Length: 256
Image (cartoon, rainbow, N blue to C red; front, side, top):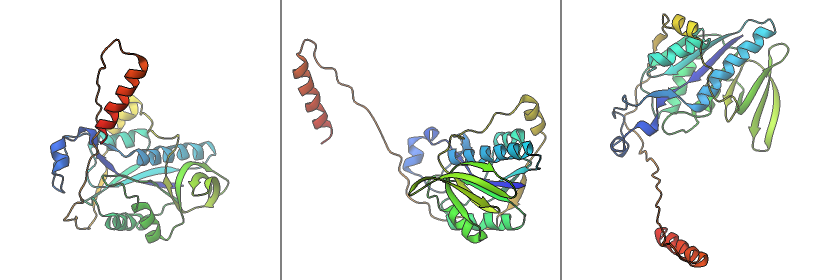
């Protein structure tokens, strides 16, 4: 069983200063902000490892690989090696805001190998369009299951998948190969690696491959929502009803 996880990293948005948000473009330097896995991609990474463990309990061989586009900081790829990924591949290139081109680059990489299961997160990156997994499945001519919650191995080359659909939560049984898109799930964080595994992973490095897709020239306009709270103290000694009326009056004035 060969499992491939397509994932993406991005800067932690709360660390990006307001000036960079106001003047955001494709060349904005956000290297000062720590990069991390997207929450749904982290679910996909951990799900792959759990499947590997379950296959091992059944006496079956399974291996996990991971692939990403763009930059991948050393602490993150060392973490992937330390928790059990056999190989990590990095397709070098800047493909922000290009879902079709991103899916094309991933499809070319995937077509060069032989995979039983491909996992992705529901969405990642700045704009969170969620288009890449669907375009990727179309290009690979694979069945796709979206909004997956958990996966369970069955006999043979099959999986049981709990997922959310427009009609509610349902359970499917599918035969592989397939592409599964992870959504909201109890499996939301990547496991921690042992110290020994971390030391061993420090000697490993991912394979870097050119993706051959030109970068975008124009970035969309991004806006970070601003929120704030105003606290006003009312004079002491007032009756409760009078204080309530004043609170309502202040709220109405602030929301006009």
